[in-house]
Image (cartoon, rainbow, N blue to C red; front, side):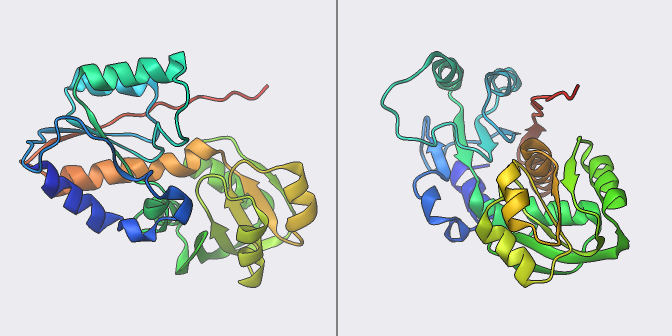
Length: 252
């Protein structure tokens, strides 16, 4: 298929206008190699982060383009350090373009947050600026935390002991006063995200249970779902490979 056709499809899945203002210039084709609108795309790799391992696996696959959630070039570059240089060298040497879908894919139907909602079986859903709110069968905080751990295949930490029926989910790092205020305003009994700080628990949670399931575990399912969707929609047009590179954080 043509590169322009793939980009059009990706923009239908996650329209760029859904992105936060801070993502300006950081989504879409962030590394554009051998660009022509008629460039043939035969192999597509999909991942969460453009790590060295991911870059190597994309190159071994023969990927023409690598679709990621987190752009490898988020901050303006004044100096290229060794870790970034190694990743970029692999990308450049193998003529792999990189396309980033970040906060636009967070907010898209079928994106990061709705995939998590599917995993947990949330009903009566509504999208907010910071995620998805929905309901589950009434349960306790400890049971729900265990369910999250099982469904996401990840360790979780949580605080709270209230009864839970209404849940707000926000993949990635959403433990901030704005997102948690939205959860409280909508009457959420639990707020699920990652990168929770002690101050968040003390200051913001009120009577809500707060659950931290990890950044990778709350975003990777959405990218895996994207790979499956592209594989189905592009059958016969391009091969699709999902590359999993879990940092495998350990607890002791």
